[in-house]
Image (cartoon, rainbow, N blue to C red):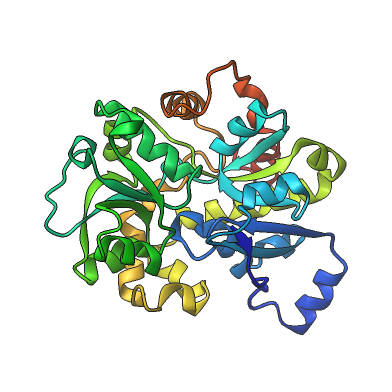
Length: 339
């Protein structure tokens, strides 16, 4: 998914801009910066956390049809990616040493929305139909493959199409290109508000994740080449410090507080009003790794690996401990007196 225009830091001002110019710069592409599942990256920017911890972070986002954030890291287009942890496993099988350095969420934050009137309640019900995913080969593609397999469907029993998010996902459901589609907020809210579809399978938080996936699913992370992180320890630690501080800030603030500091076009747009944004964020608040403050959940990597194997993406051995590190989070927690 191709890089869009750079999202500039908010609320820094002239003095802050001058200060940022004296800091090391890190480029970080997010897999959909206005999606609530990827909220912490921009929230850290809006709160001034990156500059507080000594790094100037240039955020960008990906768009449908181009280079994904995780691939942009591998190619060297950006230094870091805000993307799902699962990609580190996929890259290891391809000989690429990409690691996750802070686990921001413990659930996908996704829902499988099904078109109005279909009455679908289980993956078994979409046999012979098309299901929309963000992009073919994406993490949402894997999730659909996994829940389908657990429901007894073979890959040939249904089809998947790349439906993106926002208006493209809405159109896929509305015009019959897909009977269901996996997506997150604010697209979920828009689908319901427009009466195009309903949530059939909840992978957003808690009980739904356990029911459909079998345990914690570490999703949003910061991915980086191990070689780059080793060569840039100050920048790497600074980004993690900022994000740990952001998660800790979230523990004592509300969804409304978040909405008040985020870019206005993130929280009020054609997909949702600010009130709807806040309600959706509050509902899915449990997806964020606020208890762990960025630490990888103990059984999370194995859950993800099991899903990848069931989805037919991986058949060989994987060295799971080599796909992530908690060292930067541990250092950040010590710095903040939170360990």
